[in-house]
Length: 76
Image (cartoon, rainbow, N blue to C red):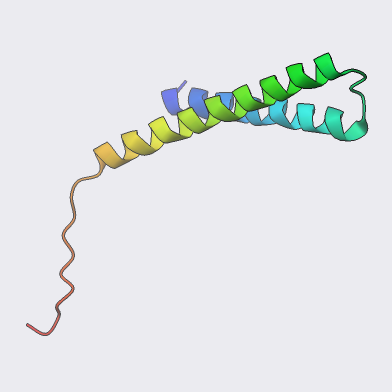
């Protein structure tokens, strides 16, 4: 399995877990403040990890790019 496929599957799982937390909150299944705070913490962790993965992927993509020079002055 390709490394990027694994990373994308991890990102997909993080998004699904985040959505499950959001759905539980919207449905009103949280019955106390302690559970609410715990789920908020989980949601923040999922978002942070997902953002960190995205940032790492963007840096990798930028490093793999070869510099391209585009001539903007077409009069010459």
